[in-house]
Length: 362
Image (cartoon, rainbow, N blue to C red; front, side, top):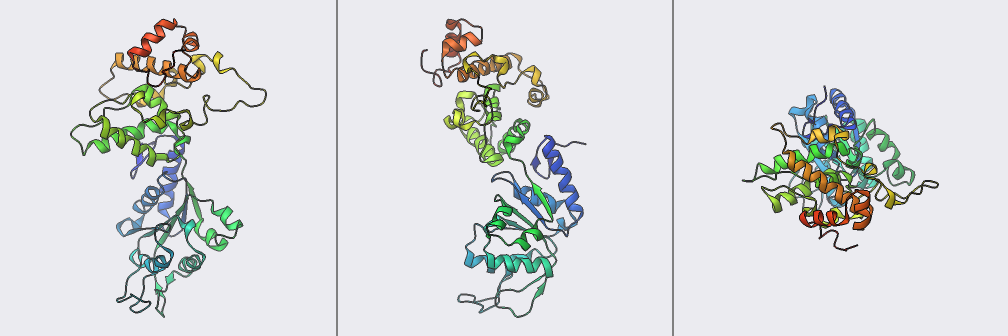
């Protein structure tokens, strides 16, 4: 049965449902290493925690290590620990994170940044199930599941000689790929709602949501920062508009610019033989929330019902904004494709306070 969340991971799309199923399978076998790949901000650590918590190791420690955040000369000691006097400043023995994760899971984030010398030592941990603290003479046995993650292409790094091939194959016994947010746009309203409620718990007044024009804009963005960027935006809007509803003009300017959108009709370059005059596009060709879009609209409806007039007004605003985008602010042409009189369109633009975005009186 489909679920909207899995150990804090939010998603209703087919690709996320497949990911939930894969995580459950991976948790059953708690010995094999896992390599999680995905862009920054997609939630790699959340997936690693879900694998750990859903497995028999869930009652033991989950130990995260960001290989990119710890200086190279300290990372070895952090991972393997050290004995007293192993190096200058080692006034006492220290347990490393590998030992601390014994019986549980060790999460190595950004493993593509790990230096070759440490890659060799990590390989031994995977092969022999033992490690040597810095300065020690005897190996220490350890029972730990290694879950690694990276936003880099490790196969290319292996080809370029920047990552050990033997370690790569040891790590990628079971590869997991997290889709970027732009490939699961149908999850954006669900994520926005989740973040609004999560952030609202700490405030006297929570955000009342995003209107249709604003939400349509969010679903068309490229989201280079993925889910983390979306969460930050909702937090930003919560601070500024607590207790209010966010409209299109309330969004930060960078989210209303054409550069923020990719892969849709507004930015895509026409292919050979498919040139089209954008001025002749019809509203039906625009990516809109409409009754025909079914689940997208239904996902936004609260259980207590909707404000019909507000939604109609929001949809009208969205149509105008999209038409103005298509015509690059040319109000005469926008009125034509909307089948409105130019004076009627100008009145609506003024009433909806859209002048700030489309100030030129064309």
